[in-house]
Length: 407
Length: 96
Image 1 (cartoon, rainbow over the protein chains, first blue to last red):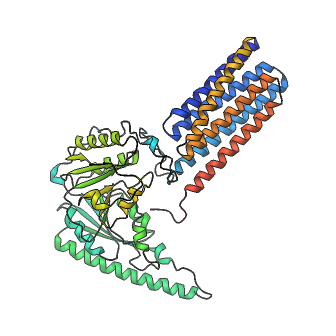
Image 2: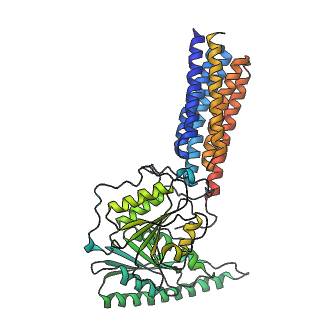
């Protein structure tokens, strides 16, 4: 009798192990594979062990098998939890059919999987960017952002860039917020000090703060008078602290955030050369316009689609914006597996929102820098705020010396 | 051949196929997380396989080895998880 029970347990355990392995081999992303591996794996191994115990049917065997099964029941959840968390934080790509990411904003998500092979399996969106019912195309009358945030970062050409972006995008009913920020961490950097240098370091920092406040005040006054003469509804705010975090909080309440390209809230007072450009190139907020001083009304828009979930979401966010709606939109993808399907879907989505849209002439090479004129042909480049892979093409567009809108 | 022997052979074959599939995933990737998951499952399959060998050969002591394999798999998975987490953190201050 116990032989038959043992045989049945062995067979069912092995079957479940096999199902787990098939799941690991066939499911599309690391998280789904983990779902198959751990749940089915522990039951498979556990049932096999129980079968072995029934077959031996001695006290010794039962003792060991009980020990192993208990051990597996305790450790497998722990290790899979740790692995799942690490995979999420490590930026393992998610299947584009994923509908919910409950850890979004709870855990940071970095990018380690820079391996070009890594993203390939994932570039096959299945219904991720389907047209949503209930989201209506914005009426033409409101072709201006409703709430607009101007980040008053001082630097070369900052005031010109801010004025240009206001003139191009803001409408008569736009509420403009002028946010003057002082980045205290940047200004507090003193670098290495000689013996007895602490006193001078403090003096240096104080002097720098004073200069930065002056610069911020003069820029703020300049923008204030500009807004008054042009008749915008505007509010003024000044804050000091970690500028990146403050900007992120403020931007969450606005449709469009304008940051002059290559400037930062140290108001040109930081020690290192090129610090401002570096910092501002790292801001990743949806709806952020990195404006150059010569920013003008673009004749067209050009969206870079990476064929993954992040890009689909970025496109949806961009289509949800209520301005620049009348401009022809071109969507270009990267030359990856499944890019054609992703592009078709993206174009269909934009067309469903009644946008004049068409596909880019050719796919871009994902790991080669993009020459901006060839990419946009004079159009305003729109790229996803976050790239799941941080590809060379994406990065070169971000760091180009031209206006770029993050979506 | 008793019913149990047939069942044993069939389960051994199935576990072997499972090891093959998981090994393919481990070699193929594509990401480090996928490899780590495959490694985790490979540890569990090794436990099952060792138990089957113990039954087939009648070596009860092999069950102790199964316990050891389970332990190694657990520590390995936690170690790899820590590595992935550390390696992905940016070296300097955080991005905005």
